[in-house]
Image 1 (cartoon, rainbow, N blue to C red):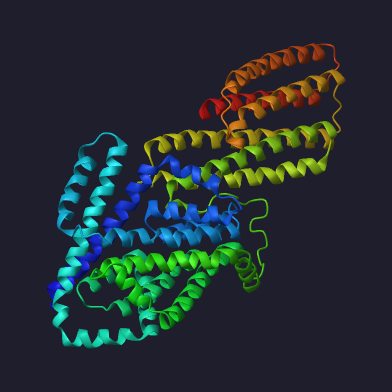
Image 2 (cartoon, rainbow, N blue to C red; image 1 turned 60 degrees about the vertical axis):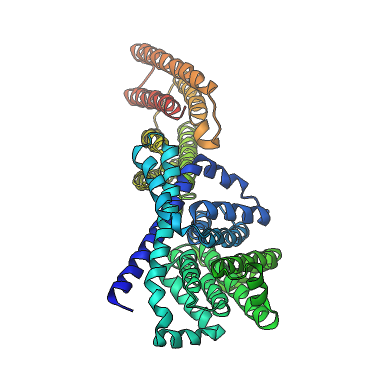
Amino acid sequence: MSLFNIFALAGGLGLFLYGMDMMGKGLESAAGSKLKGVLEKLTSNRLMGVLVGMLVTAVIQSSSATTVMAVGFVNAGVMTLSQAFGVMLGANIGTTITGQIIAFNVSDYAPLFAILGILPMMFAKKRRMQSIGTIVAGFGILFIGLNMMGSAMEPLKSDPGFISFMTHFQNPLLGVLVGTIATGIIQSSSATVGILQTLAAQGLVSLDASLYIVLGCNIGTCVTAMLASIGTNTNARRTALMHLINKIIGAILFIGVLYIFPITDIVANLTPGVPKQQIANFHTIFNVLNTLILLPFGGTMVNLVTRLIKDRDTGGHGGKRLLYLDERILETPPFAMVQLQKEIGRMAQLAIENYRNSVEAFFQKSDDLVQAVFEQEGSINYVGREVTRYMVKIQGLQALPQSDKDKIFRLHDVVMGLERIGDHAENIAEFAQARMEQEVKMTPEALAELRQMCDIVGEALDKGLARLIDGEEHPENVALVEEIEGKADGMFQTMRDNHIARLNQENCTPMAGMLFTDMGIDLERISDYAMKIIRLVH
């Protein structure tokens, strides 16, 4: 094999991987908002998880990416081990679609597909047409790469050294080992199976050897998930281990089946004389049967990995932690957007809770509530920083639609508003602390006015932040919050007038007057932020 052939083989592999990546990104972009609804389908029903795993993998063209995403969801606490079990089994089936595509003999038309796809990519104005062009171009480039690899490997047919080397692949364990190592390096079972299909089409690998290599490819794809689980919580590590155990059990079962039953003959007779299709069919059959066998034992598998990896998590940052964000989910922007909005909703809930605690700390003179407010303010600031950092990373993703980029710009302002609400709540807690430490006496009239203002502002927060928290649209709340905010402004003016009257009558001490005025200012500003936020999210 000449140096030129080696370069051609490497170039063909590069084009093949690039084409597969283009197809995945194009499909993901075209699916767009539909992918966002997939999370809602993840119930405790493992069969639904299988279907979701199949769908997502078919769209993004990578079972490794789906599995890494599952590890990320489990790490973020939004997916259970049982749900992840079903998703990973479904991903195993979904990844076989690439092999079935490769099995179609359309290599002669590959350049035509490439140019037909590139034209809308360059000249189409609508994003959907650009996405379709990316899919078609990726399809063509994938087959151009396969053609290059096939041509580069053709001289090996008559190479005595290579022929002697390939005879060793008749050993089942060696075939499994080679498939495992090759996929572990490339980190894509679809790519390894695609290369194997090309070798088989050239007559360089027998069908017997190919089947064992396919089993190894399925084990090797676990490397990505195992690497992704490093530094995650206990359940995320269990998810990656469960994925590996599933694959090993399946490979062991099928090695036994290949020894006992004439599976090779059955696969060969399904599509006689078409090695690419035979390998693709076996890859699909293996993963479908493996799913059917293992799916009923989901509970057993969860119990097994729970025993193998003991609980060691200590709670991370304590209150300063993220519930929904995980950088592994960034691999799939539509899901990352869903999780981002959930985390911002949680931040909104923390801000409302802190406001209510600060108000009660002031009226109840509770030092415990004051300390709780200070502690939770640290959590709000932490979540705000991490959410902002996450938004910057999402904005850098090429596959992110422009509509989502525009939404992120608005969400930046929302997060800033929530942080300011938290700051004002902290100010109110400091007023409560000063009232207790300096034993400030306030008139019943002043306290009643402050309580009324607090109730008005609390209502503004409930209505203004509702969409962030429950994810539902509340268009009627926009006018309501504007009305409430106007009421708060009017109330603040009335409070100032009454305060001046009390000062003139010497019914109010200077310290009490300062607390009253400053707290009124903070309350009025909180209502302003509630109105700004509801306008940003509707």
